[in-house]
Length: 90
Image 1 (cartoon, rainbow, N blue to C red):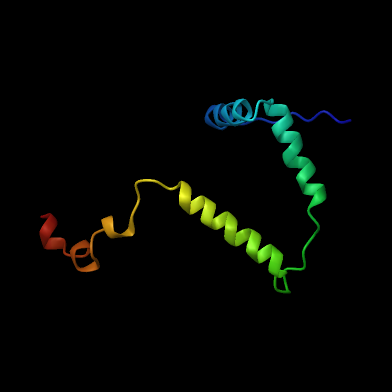
Image 2 (image 1 turned 90 degrees about the horizontal axis):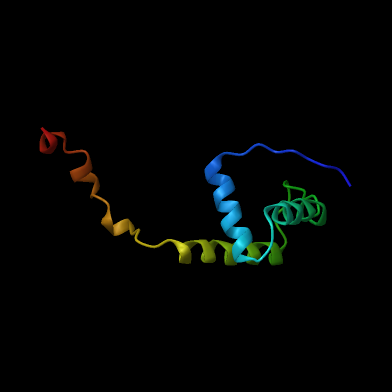
């Protein structure tokens, strides 16, 4: 087994620790799991469309990410005409 040393910023490490604690594991085990995932994921020919099961997996992942976003709505943004009305901000 090889030993790898990685430097990361404090915030990333803090988040990794929190994620590890939530999974009742260590940061080292999280990183090992991530790296093991690399060898289990087959290389893909990006010139061809993704298989249907990969498309569905990514679709579900996108839905999960959107479900975690709280407090943001596109309707909260300014309409285009108000955004570009410079006289309003003088």
